[in-house]
Image: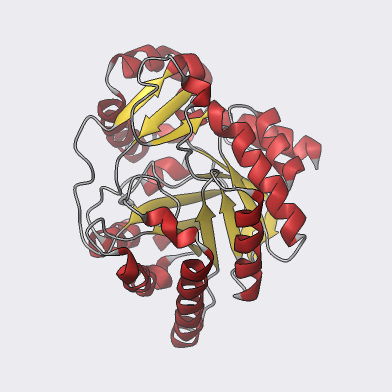
Length: 347
């Protein structure tokens, strides 16, 4: 039985549950299946290595952060054939996130709205989970660790949280992502402003160099940005990324716009909107970034990828790699193979 058929049989059951309950059921089930050796039956994408930021990715299709916030399910997720796994967002201290319900499916729009609020068990538990994974122990592939700030940390002290997390996760990461673009932590997106971003990147770059000396290993830093920024903001961000020699940029996070889901059930829920409605928004940011950056640093394109053709469109817009999340919820694991196959043809 194909993994696509299996998922099409499971999906009605999963979609009968509310979105967060389905998430909390699916990941432990995937872990159990992997521990029983069942994930070996899944068909894997062919190898299609790409070297980006000095890292060789087995294929250009990665898992976006947010699905596995605590790094509890790395091995099971890796078995789905991703070229990289990004986990987090993690914060210095454990926090519960926002009150439930806080995740909503909008099936008519192939979309999800979430206001999770960086719910996680804190960076020490996160690092322990990474260390315990076979994926990390056997150096099986590329692991991105995504860091953020605690909800109760004042925005003027945000850099302290990022520096704390960077120091903790650095030894275990293939690359580290700095998330300043979630709409679900109050004032977080202020860090995308010119002076705030300059200050944060300056401190992070200094810490990265110090940690590289200490661990005798250079771990690239990427910045994850929002889709809700205009051309002037994109220009400012691109200049700051280049000036501080940041290694890559992930475009984009979820959107706060609601034009594409007006009138739909849950369409007015607060939080970040992901899935098909963010596809063109993120492509527009990727194109604008590419125009500003040229080949100065690579772009990882994420947002609304539901097919191999969507993944190719992200590459055509200027991305060197892509990541998926919402498409995986709606399409299942076959999406990874579909994307890798289409990108290989495009190359």
